[in-house]
Image (cartoon, rainbow, N blue to C red; front, side):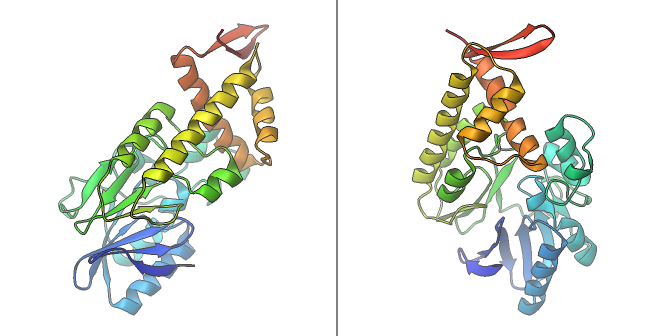
Length: 293
């Protein structure tokens, strides 16, 4: 774990739970792509930088999920480097309580306020900041999260963040977290047409050909949507639907899974409703989801 691998002439990545990219535009100076899940990840990165004699010039955030920004505060405190994050991702990185609050739909209780869902906050700047490496391409990848982006370095390495789940993840978890299903499907189509030397998803093996995995993820979304539509049938409440999906996909209910999968299912329902495939009706002061005939 945390094994350094070379991706291109100027680019490396750390093989770890959420891959960390390293871009070296000049000898002795590097930028990170994300920072790992917590302070310990930050310490591991610092040790590597010291062993290599590298100076950290900045951290390029793909998105603000805790497993991608958890080391930012520690590293920023150690190096005084800028953390680059755009749009809503910048706000969530500065005020990480927004993630569990968004997922839960209210003030998150203690079982949701921990490093898995809530990183330590840090100061951020936008991609227009003068210290951002202009030669790095910022690629919008919405869908998984609000304003998620990827980065393409000059040697053709493309960091894809969480827009793709690996085969093992798809098999194990059944329902991968999504915020905007329509935007996610458009992103998968975009990824399938990208050109690059090496593609590095955060939670799947690096590959020179990303198209098969993009197709696999798109198929998984379509299968989940079909299952949800079928389970809505003549009408079901959200809690009943969620429990049935957990049973169907062999998932175990925890506080974290409740908010992550629950938020994702609500996003699927919104997408299906906007397409006219399900409807939301109120009966006896309860909301029911029904498949359209």
